[in-house]
Each structure stands twice: as C-alpha cells, then as structure tokens.
Amino acid sequence: MRITTTISVVLMALVTLSWVPQTTDKIKWTPETQLTWDNFMGSSEEQTEYAAYTYAELSYSVHSDGEGTVVAYVTCNFIPSKSWKDTKKNLTPAILKHEQGHFDIAEINARRLRKLFKEYIRKNPKSKSLGKDMTTMFHAAIEKMNVDNNRYDSETVHSINEEKQQQWNTKIEAQLEELKEFEG
Image (cartoon, rainbow, N blue to C red; front, side, top):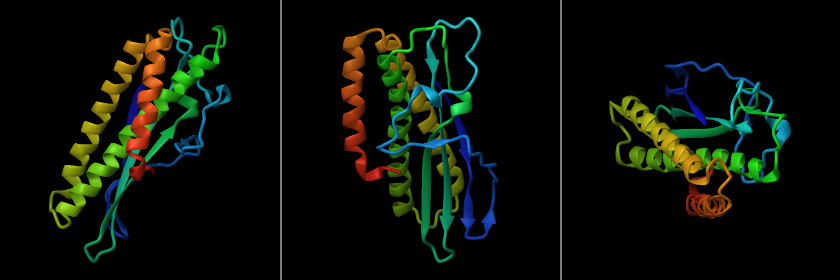
C-alpha cells in the first residue's frame, strides 16, 4: 500500500501557502464506506503475485480565523484510479475485506493525526513554528501508517492467513472505535 502526502496549509483565512490541486477521483472514508471491486479502477502492475492494491491518501489543512483560533482538518481518501485488482485472480470477499482493512488503517492514522493536531494546537495556539511542526507530525504519521500497513500485510500474508486476518479485523474495528471521537 502506498500513501501519498498532500499538504495544504492556510495560516490566515485568505492566505494559502501551499496549493493542492483537487480531483474528483477520491472516495472519502466514512463509517458507511465499504469498498467494492468496482472501486478498483487502476491498472494492475504487470506480473504481480497480488490480487489487489489499495491506494489511500491522507491530507491536511490548517486554518486560522485571524483572531487566534486555529483548526486543523485531516482527510482520508481512497483513490480509485491508483487502486487496482487483477481480474485474472480469484477476487474473493476475503481479499476485498483485506483491502478495506488498508483503507481503515489509513483512517486510524488520520484519527491519530487529528488527535495529535488538536492537542498540539491546544497547547501551542500561537506557535511561530506551527506549520513546520505540523508538517513534521504529518510525515511521522505517514511513516507510522506505512509501518502499520506493511505489518498488516506481513502478518496476514495478504489475507491468506485467515486466523491472523480475523485478528487484524478485530484490532482494526477496536482502534476505529477507540478513536471514534476523532472521526473525520
């Protein structure tokens, strides 16, 4: 699973420091969002052993009302054009559930980042290094998410180890619930 970093920082209501082009090729994570095989619209890598690939993206923006109130927004999206399935493989519901797990792991990390940003802003509302510090936190969150996804694939053997996959399904559900307060 690859994770891209998209950063848009706004320090004043009308001053944008970094512009990020928006596309409609995104499915925002919500509790109701369940991926289907139709969502995987990208081209599969040639000669891969895998049945599918989930591409998720985290992005954030920071806004200030000019009176000292700073708010950070973190989004988690599935990117259909960069996510693919190998139609020559047996695309089972178990494999789709595994891919949903990657999307859910991205959301878990988005929630962790929302929590971290909220705590940071509360403690440092007028920090001159706010943008730099938040960018550092964002990159650390991306690294953590990549570690989580690699561990998920390794332990479940990409969904083949059914016992480990079920353990991860339970763990993912528990983490989403534990961080529910920070849902996007």
